[in-house]
Length: 232
Image 1 (cartoon, rainbow, N blue to C red):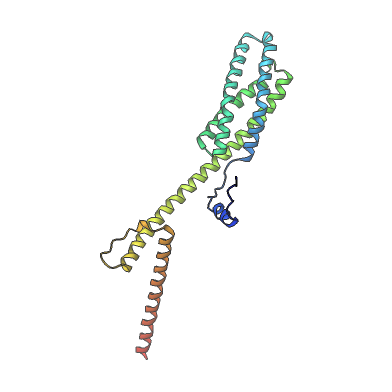
Image 2: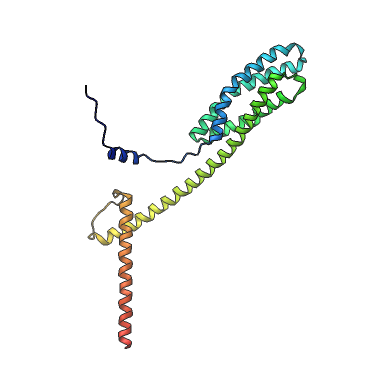
């Protein structure tokens, strides 16, 4: 059975040129940190649970309860936090990035610092090594996420201002086009300006203004010549 022939190259190029281009605002540093951090997380929390089991009998009663609660809370947060980071970074979503940043800065970094720096919980060498790497990734992520949120906020504000300016220009162009059609078409003719393409409307307005300016300059030149002749 014969396969469908592929379209010519110039048709493919025209189709490709019609695809709208958009500048990506995602953070490469944040994406790399998230990617490696996701692979590190299972080792971090498996070691935390294993080390907690090994030293549980040697801990004070208060720290037993605190450490169990901290490990459970940190594990639950880490199940959701990377998803918010991926979704917010790749989708350029400020709400998701804000949730990711808050979970990292307010919850995970203090918990990780407590687990590394508190001698009363008797951190083991394996815990210290993995939690130190975990803390480094958290710091990279919180800084890059903050910079990305600022960049996205500035970009969206600028885009909003540009959209307002374009809407104002469209309204002015429409008024100019109605004025042009009023002079070109017979009186009483009904015409819908919105039916014309935007680029055609702008071209007609520019052409009419150029012709009007040329006529104005020519008329001014004729008046000046007449004044000179009269003086002579």
